Length: 485
Image 1 (cartoon, rainbow, N blue to C red):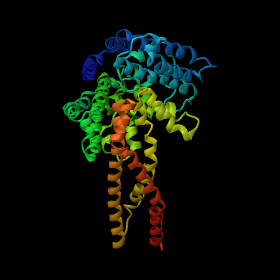
Image 2 (image 1 turned 60 degrees about the vertical axis):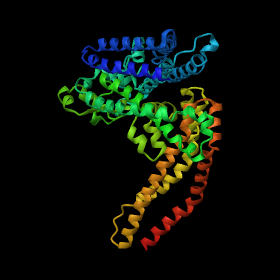
Image 3 (image 1 turned 30 degrees about the vertical axis):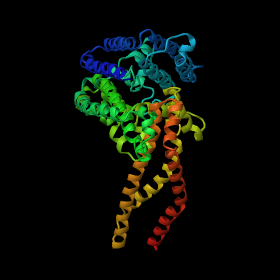
């Protein structure tokens, strides 16, 4: 695993450094071919003969997208055909390649195919939206990027070196804008990249130390079982912290690659969001023809901001933390799956299950991802208590008793926030260890060693807040009625 990490980090650093040269290229078609050649070279480097998997995925999707998307009878189904084929290839042909007499692909090839499984159907979804969007759509679903997409455009988008190894996911329009909009010429990505590199430099030694002291495999040893229960339970926190640090390093480097190439640079006034890009795309189109004003505008790279470290660490809510974790992938899941699934009551379950499938067939993905909804029921009740304190904590009161109540409510909100933060961290750590162990037998062994205490604790807390819910909420409402009299 460590050697794979070294190769991965080295290639990302190489790609990041290449961005300094890449941004100096003025002609869009030269930039396009340069990015594609380097990206394809990276795929060959990490995959060898297994590069046939991403090549085949891209070629078939290019045929689907260019031959079905613009036909009036098929444009409504093109995105679904691309989605079904891409996931079928990932989940059946690629993941069971040994059953078809093919060699098992390297770890990094898996990452390449995984991101292509999102990018290519994502392009088809964008084309579908462009065909049905109104001409005055503020988010620019029908922008110039979709007026003509040929076979080679799909190839270039798929193999462009920015994000080819592991992401972040970015839309075809974002890629097209980086070639045909002027903003990457007027932004200096180094200050933000330098800031993230300083974080990475701090994270790497911390990760190496914690990975040495608190490896997840230690939970499978007899020595671990012989330790007292409290230590065994508390062990999940540093183990999960080690996992988070590893993800932070990889995601930050991937973001730096995009930033140094100029991909995802948009004016701040256009209100960019991760994955989506500018919410106000009309302003993007106006500024593209007003170079003098475009030079003066402050710009950001929120479009390719894939991991908000501080929000992940300090947010007290699991829902919000999940949105800040691998944000661009979360955007794809929300837009392409969650919002389009016809049965609202099943949207969360289906989206999380597909996310687990996308990661692989290892049991750890399902133990981690698919158990999250069980916690959300508890969190939803606690959030009502928290919001109740927040809503009433800053009322303008003129009586001493009201000021005292307001102060108590502020303190209660702080207590609820800390409790929710601890509960979130415990939930994610308890579910995060299986994500690292992966195998079913190892996961069950781990949970048995903790006597399934996380499940019991979660169920107990849910029953407590469920029982207290009508009393606490009704009491607050009663107090407010007395104050109004």
